[in-house]
Length: 110
Length: 118
Image 1 (tube, each protein chain N blue to C red):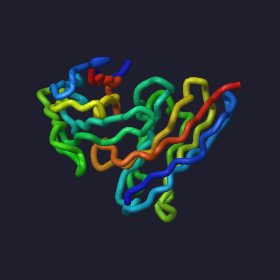
Image 2: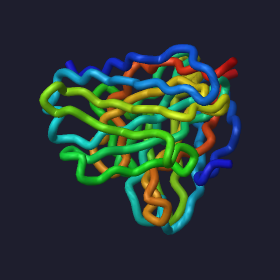
Image 3: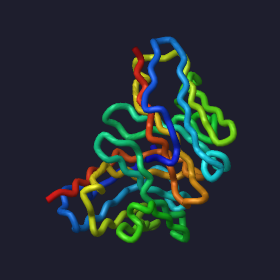
Image 4: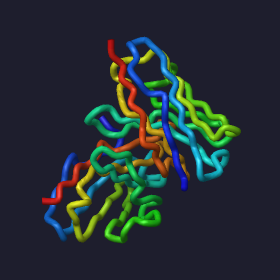
């Protein structure tokens, strides 16, 4: 069981918007930087969002992040079939002295 | 180009040992903390271990504490993971990842598969 809680799956039609939630606690999301990763089928994870809502170069602004208290949210607008992937949130847990990830959310673009 | 390339994976019997390596290039390796993250077949990501830039701070997941040892050689731009007393549940793709800051991992290597089976 993961320290961070994500929905197992979300789906939406092409062109629509979807949000993926990530719930934690004060020892992780509440007091540490949150990042989001995209893992396309058969590939290594890739950094998508860091420091709550910053995007590495090359990541389109269709991807956004937010945080409120001990929860974080990834938003994706203008969905494309190429966005079908597993998405993970991650952060540091100060109580565990360990990195932690959510269980992952599979995005299906119908 | 910033690049991480893992090697050393393979098939090992339960109770056996394996040493993974990660070769870094394209950035000042000695300035960054580094991590190992694993992914069991069909499962999610699991953080394994991290080591600070000068090896002063080392952390492990409870699931590997006492069995795995992380190390680095800044002169060789290399990260290592010594895995002892391997179990079936250690079967996974092992990724090395640079820590930009506070467990923000970028980039990731392509991964190396470790299979623990008799």
